[in-house]
Image 1 (cartoon, rainbow, N blue to C red):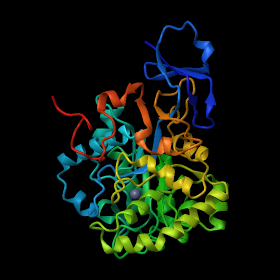
Image 2: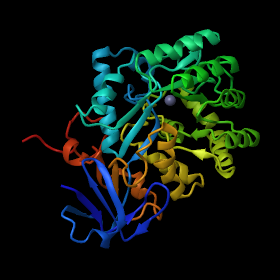
Image 3: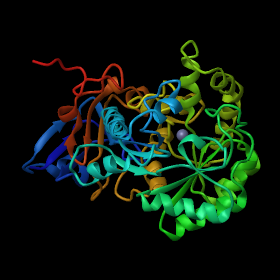
Image 4: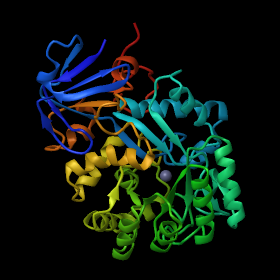
Length: 415
Ligand SMILES: [Zn+2]
């Protein structure tokens, strides 16, 4: 039977909150969004949203499901047997879904172990979020994240690496345009893959119907990646006024991943490697300024967290909304970045908005997240999550107090 949500507010992915609207869904699809009076007499199950806001499920454009977010994550991932690695992906993806995230883009996995999990969700064999997967990152020999990536030198090798990823099921291509924070001894501001290598990879990806995302922190690498035609710049520590104008002109998205450095520094007292702490401290303010500059320039921003980096927990993704609004982004724009804008970047044509014909990926939060972003950013304020119409909290449990906790049904005791 169809289900009608009504009584409270509605944020449709673009605008809101709107009062007085009802949303009717059936068989995992949104049938209609209209003034509540239009549904009088319709035979359906009714869910009262009074005191709450119905919005699209959140979309995280940058995660690493293969990682359990521990300080030594590269070594942990590499020492994981492959048959166990897919289980890690499954648990991380479901933990994210419990936390209100109904679609995720994995930008760098481990030995393609995320692909069977993505397929199980996609084919409805298991309940999980929509996954858009890059397979392995493509980096220069010895470049950032080389331990988990395909290492290449030259344009022909870049083309080959794109094809290898697509052969194994990649939906999107991830390119490493600069050094990074997490790899010891590498400078995040140094350009890595060359303009020629990036261009060859982006063009091959596009020819085969895939989009490209570039890990790019320093300005020279950001310029290389934007000129090569990538769809999104990930992290973007050093977006100058000139680069912001170029990205706006070309429509290039920024996926800020502010949570990565924030969670590392929040947990500085832990077992954090020295190089990670040192670089996080050194680049935090640069990244914040870069974000503010791009925001002021009117650039397109899509939410991404880099979940899987230390203490950046799967299921805690929504916290990125707090990070973005703390730097001056309005709550409405942050919600748009986490829904409709993110769906646009990921090419998810029927998600990220509450419109007729779209998937019933829904998040119901207490109060009004446009007035107080914490309503969406803190899963404790989430009243419900629906994935393609399935009630996630009823089927998988509410988000646990500790994301990644071993209990399948977090918060429930066995009989
Ligand atoms: Zn990442």
